[in-house]
Length: 114
Image 1 (spheres, one colour):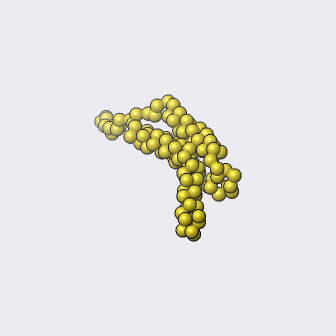
Image 2 (image 1 turned 90 degrees about the horizontal axis):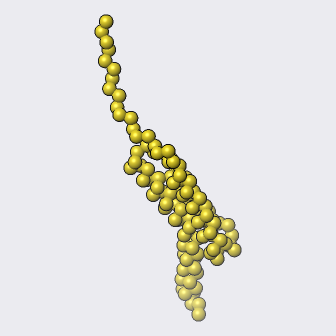
Image 3 (image 1 turned 90 degrees about the vertical axis):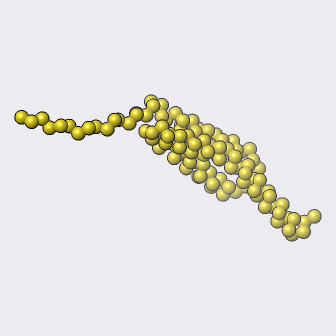
């Protein structure tokens, strides 16, 4: 009886560290709290709700950080996406306020305000 050789099995990928979800969970909490604090602390909160629509972008970045990856180099992608999403959620409302005020001043200046 002839033994059939078994095919070589490639080395297994390194398994994920146990708390792989810890960083995305922290980024999710940071984005939610940063977005709420940033939106409540700026003057556009008394306006209509349309300035809150672009919060979809930071939340999408944070949601993308939840995708688990087995490689160490692609874990960095999740950390960067989560950090950028949390930072954008924090500063978006103040950035929108600055842009709206700048547009108002420029329009006022071109209309001969004074």
